[in-house]
Length: 74
Image (cartoon, rainbow, N blue to C red; front, side, top):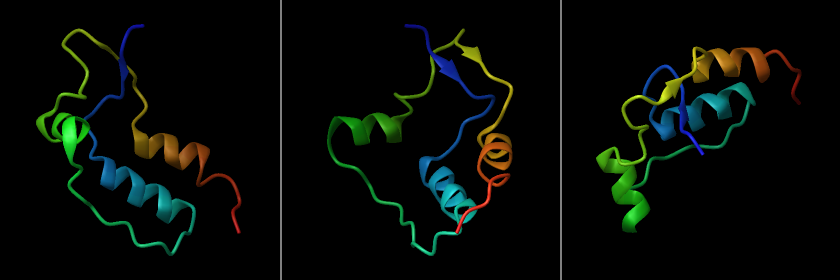
């Protein structure tokens, strides 16, 4: 299965915070250092797409504005 990536690099904690704000959540989102191989891969860029990967044109923020903020939430 080929990789698909957005147009730019994003930090997961920033994406989660933006999503929580869009959902009007009052939950505090904190950044933690994940242990193990997955945590190492996230920190070292091992989960980023490889060269030549097809990239989308819609950023996470654009998607969030269109898909989440455009809907009504409690």
